[in-house]
Length: 258
Image 1 (cartoon, one colour):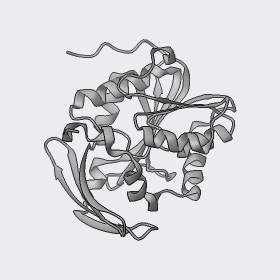
Image 2 (cartoon, one colour):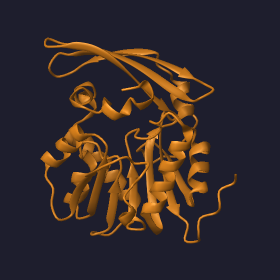
Image 3 (cartoon, one colour):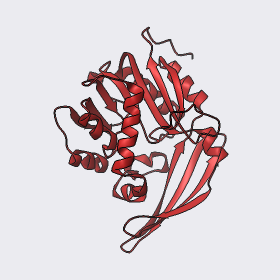
Image 4 (cartoon, helix red, strand yellow):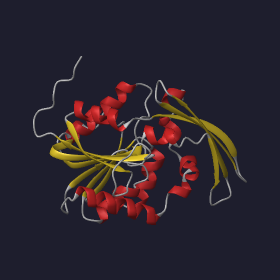
């Protein structure tokens, strides 16, 4: 797989192992409780989680009474999500988030893009297309919640190297570099454990709140609130994570400037 399409096979069992320390039932429930608080939607509201990964949020939202669709490209993560359980109000679909199903147009009360699940693609135009797709999924007045890294804050606290250990003793080390012109963060990961070792790279384009808000506005989504990650406090220039709440305009989307 070319480095430009690193995302096509990156989210596998190794990914689950690498980021194991970040995944816990307590964290998942905390995140979902905050999302529900921000949305304020009634039971039965339709929610799209894209990309949904291993279903950490989708499963709990369905448990809380929402009608949930999860959408992801990774067969490994979708298998993990389905193993958590599915039902009449929880479904999973495989696909590319640049081209969401036509039948879902205008179906959802909320679209969720969580846990730094944006900026994967080589071309910025693809990121713009993803935001357009999110907007197309929403009913008029529906809400997009975008939660991920904030370029300003990440750069203010930039960490070139770090390492950690997983539950099975595997040592994970990362080395990072950032291109200020393209906004692309490049990460080289090396791992070594009792059974195996290896390395690989991934890249993600980081956005400022201003630029992401502009992409939303071009798609007819108006940012109503910006938080310091999941905390109930305003976004600042030193926030390493941001959560934006954008509502779909009731009026027709503006024509994009050429």
